[in-house]
Length: 394
Length: 168
Image (cartoon, rainbow over all chains, first blue to last red):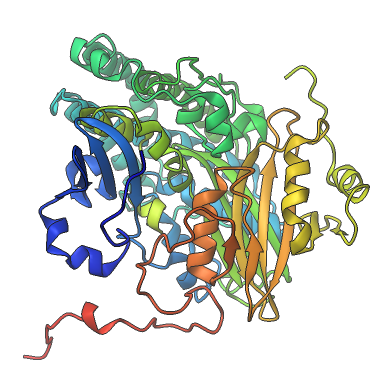
């Protein structure tokens, strides 16, 4: 049976102004209705819109509509200097600013052949892993809220996220928009108070992960709503270029830190967490596992940072002009493979800077994942992918 | 993944050049990524070979992006193989006036959103794409913002201008 579209394209301003859309349900045929989810909806984790076609309660088609948060970052980057542009990357995936800083800096370094001092590399690993922990805190907390555990897990996870934000604030003065990792290394020397505070937090964190697990892992509501829901077969995940915890929860052992090591990761000891099931629950378990791995990595990194003396950054002029050329990077951000592609024409600003955002590409198979599931599962499946709209829309 | 045998960019290019003419290879050096430049009319057949050839098996369309080089648009395909663990950069150029390239969505469904983004930002039309519409901007938007001649600030459509005056 084919669906006859009686609506204009959902990406159109005219469609948005159409009063029939505001009522959010439009009759299509005998028993098919179109339901508009978002863009202002708490469970879309930002301003993401889904146009669902339903047959009764079952989803037969879904269309992702995005761009509500599009700020033209890639265009603005062509106007700023290489160092200024780091500030824009914070605002892409705003839950993982450090990872974005690093991905962009790495692309510039690869292009211009800048060598980062050893200490700088260790500081990067330390901050990126703390960032991953904090970002997974949000992912798990809001996922719990989406599924119906209300706000208890969210408050627990935000407690530790806030502690990590405080640490970052101690190091660079900002909670979320750090611009701390810059081409060349890390922007600032760490203050003395940082080390004991970080040590204390890292000693504390494993117990906190146990707390989240006590709340969620065997929680009957949580398990019933997530187990076997939204299964993504590994071959689909690969064909759609999915990455991060979503792909690893489908049993694919792909982690950029292991597959294409960057920075100081080859010196570190960690496991790539995978699950074979491919459902929403497996994605949650992968994130929990990665939080534990991140604590271990951060502990190793802190030790190395404390042991390594010397500069944490290569000296780089604010107006530095790399030779004409191109460079790309890829790193494992909390959401998956994050990459930048930078082209230089020899001036102080990039000729082109492109971001490969994991969230944007991870929602590619969403329509396929939703088809056949009930309306109530939409939120669970979307929540389990963990998208950040700042990164989807750029 | 026991039979993994990663190839270098040169070896991949040689294997492709055995079947396709008019390919050119840019070797890696400081500030340049090793890449194979392919004519538009061979793109789909070449991508088919990249995916299906036993020794290549590029199954992961990691990144598709556009660059405006003023004389032409270049679309860069960064592909990866999970079977062999190697990767390749394919570049394809198209005329600025008549920017059309064949779509590779039939080979990798993951190319869908990425090609739509290139269309949205550069106006490169991908023929054979199931839904060649704007993805980040709205349908009525005029122009293609990442083209070098687009300029900043972008023109704001009249219906989006707020009827608010900031003068007291």
